[in-house]
Length: 333
Image (cartoon, rainbow, N blue to C red; front, side, top):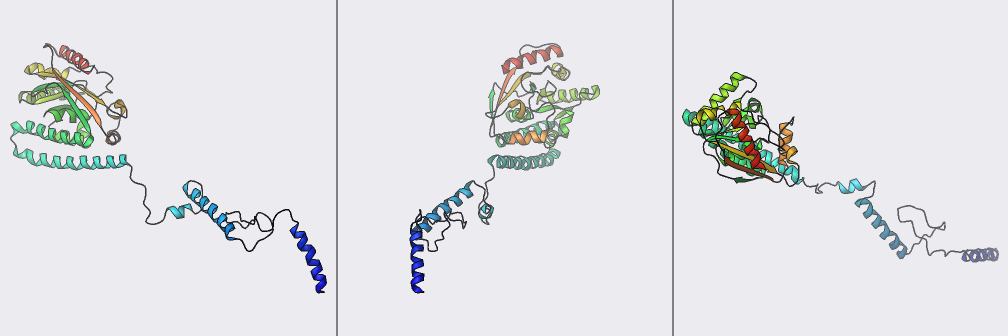
């Protein structure tokens, strides 16, 4: 019996030795955690070299999967407690800081002027409000990153007529010299800017009513006679800056009546990245809050302001409006 078994075993061993592949040379796993082998012969005792060959490719595949390839366990590996999250975008942080600064210091400024006005004589209240607004505007320009360049001497009294592009015009003009603004009635209802405008003694004019417009003219005349600088945006509305709109002459009457000094002012803005007509100029049917928040994202805004005394002395309101507009157009070109 033993001889028969031995005689059968030897041919089997010789047949296995004649197989076209070596029995234990390439018995390596596929290196992806699968039990599939390169051929069907199972090699129970794998060599350390084979194990090393499997382990290294497996680690490289895991690394690639975490870096960019889909992997079922990737989220568990990445979103572990204590792992640092992505930083806040710089633009979002800039908007937040500017919003908080403007809101906080505006409330402080409003509280200051409200508590101070009752103790000031009525004759000096207008100039006190103008100086208060000038201080706040200089601070606001620094917060908003507005870099201002001026050309020509700023007026110290009389009427200043200027083109109108944005609510930034008020900050720019008031930061140069204390002044009283003439604005349309709708501005009084604006959040923040409306509150500041009322506290600063702005003269609100309802152009749709002749009686209300006449009261505005009387308020302008009194302010001019008190020695203040009164700012008038004679276009009656803001524009995109491509041109200067025709001037309305009704509110120029106080300047002719008082024979005061008249100064022409020209404002321009520029941006390194962005469109001035859409992101700085406030016109058409734009909404204030979204426009203001987008303005807060701008790292820097360049503003140019030029002053020049009126050339000549027209005798009528229409001639005065035409002469001022032509002079401001020439100053901006």
